Image (cartoon, rainbow, N blue to C red; front, side, top):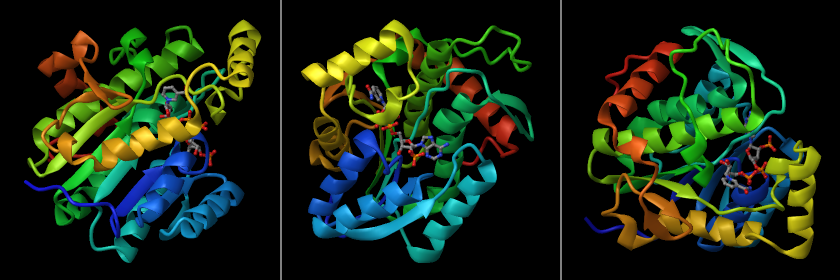
Length: 291
Ligand SMILES: NC(=O)c1ccc[n+]([C@@H]2O[C@H](COP(=O)([O-])OP(=O)(O)OC[C@H]3O[C@@H](n4cnc5c(N)ncnc54)[C@H](OP(=O)(O)O)[C@@H]3O)[C@@H](O)[C@H]2O)c1
């Protein structure tokens, strides 16, 4: 199957208002793509859309809080009203929260971090799967993190009785990202390539804005002295994952920057991936056999 260039591609990019996603949006613009920028901050969203247009692309900003499944459905509806296909779905938005926040879903309570970082990407993919089919060859890129290796799923802890730990909650969601993208690759048609990607340590993005203590200080110093990767480098790698022809045959792979690497060994566990898939559907009140 021959891959296509990204000029005129319809790209749905969550987390396009800050950090890695904002830099990726600018690069998608340079390539001439039509970018649906998703985020909560309207001012930054509109400013990023302006940059996309200055660079030669076009698109729209859609304000949506991925902590609300109804907002995710409304977002997908807006995409469907405007476009007849999606060529690239870049599931990049994520947050880390210092304290546990709990959201009630039809299937029970969940951590907000798990909802925003994993369940909403799952739901958005469900809602846009028809448009991805219409765009084939198409691509789904899930921004995960190397920290997924430290994640523990805890699907059997629905009452959230475990003590909260911010890094643990974030790592759990990032493990779910890789399990989801790998499972998605086994379920979607061959002409939809699905990839998970780790952008590297990007200290100057907004991800660490609420990080305090010694680690928060270390991140700020790292940003000042240029340790780690810039948002532009990480954004370019996201666009590489979205557009590189040679990745078409790598569906299900995990990328660190531009290199395919083995993810945590648990990602190879079919039963674990299916369990997360089914549990995600149950929490969102979806039929798990949607793909
Ligand atoms: N920075 C790193 O070192 C690093 C390392 C590994 C992986 N990553 C991953 O890279 C991706 C991008 O993060 P970043 O570093 O660029 O952080 P960032 O600057 O904080 O960007 C996060 C983006 O997610 C959006 N977002 C967060 N919560 C949302 C919600 N409830 N609803 C809608 N949008 C929401 C934000 O939009 P608003 O600001 O408009 O709300 C923002 O555009 C994430 O998946 C992260 O896990 C980052």
